[in-house]
Length: 250
Image 1 (cartoon, rainbow, N blue to C red):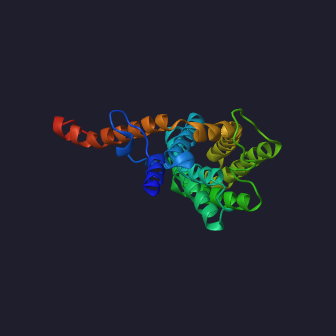
Image 2 (cartoon, rainbow, N blue to C red):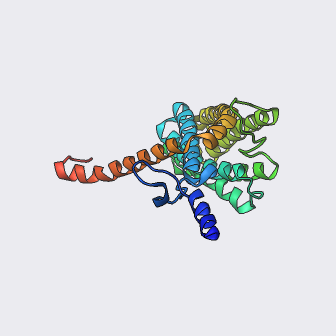
Image 3 (cartoon, one colour):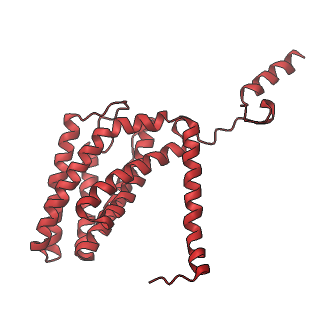
């Protein structure tokens, strides 16, 4: 009887009360994955993607913003999620993959402005530059800290200056490769300044973003997840609605 009582107590600790259901009927499954669960990673991705996408898009156009926003959202969510979990040091292939994905975003965004030759060169130079930066210690998680207040360290500020100069030079070299030096010189300057300023701004708010991602109540994350599911269903249904009402698509 005592053993059965102890077993029942342990089982009772792994259950939670849901409205209208007895506590002993509903097992406690943490669908959100706890403090560092998948929805928290998704929250990071949406936040970083929106910040970079809007920042770059305002200066370099909506397509550039969309391409780079998606690339930054995917990679930074992965990278900051690993850092928040105190995972082992990133491997070279991981940092190279993150650099390549962001480089692809830059390539697609730049290509729609000055053609694929320019975009391809800009994307490759961006990828190589990021890999080198990782090797010398310049990475998005530099001086990582979670805090309810924004913060910008000297090393983070210098890393933003490094990006400004690096992308300006990359734009100029890409223009030389594509034989578009005159037109793309302005792009290099704009891209360098935009990337540097947006990076510095986002880095300043990283402590607050990370603190928020780890402290958002599970119930709010659940609402956020349901909203994303509904949005996905709505987007999936658009093609059927268009076909049903016979809306011409150009």
